[in-house]
Image (cartoon, rainbow, N blue to C red; front, side):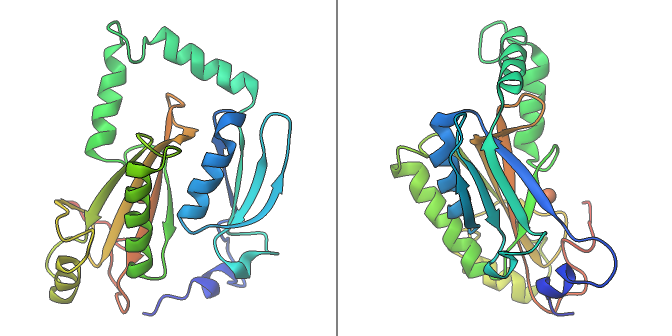
Length: 228
Ligand SMILES: [Fe+2]
């Protein structure tokens, strides 16, 4: 079966993925958050300056410009949510010697599996594009003051066993030395964990996932989940 993302989005019945709303903490992070979404390949179609921080509209591809799906909205958290996050941080002693053990438990779970809590996945059209984005983000995380110490990338190779996939990934600039494996075949994942976007139980980070599925695969990581 060949991938056809447009056909899926324009199916005559059923639903399509409409929009996702993501947030940065406050106005000081507006431009950095916008830069991150552009760096992962989203197309910016609107920027509306607002007193609490810019509001942005993105789409997953140029053909979605005037559509009602494939949209990502980016805006600042409003004050009540910032106050709630700050209260959670303070009451649980996050990052202090008195930190509630529940916080470390949650962090351990997420470091073992970035998919264990809320996250959002984008499907890429080519592995080369995914590799270029990850290389660019790694570079930015090292050298760009906007991104330094704010991005952690975790890579999952496809479950082993398909010779063509294994060979391609062995030759990949990012997957050759990856030691983690996805819960499925013929697809790869890249998780971008960042505090530039805020969500989740502690309101401190968000995980964005980039996926690629090898063509002509009826059974792959996003169609059948396999454990073990
Ligand atoms: Fe996922």
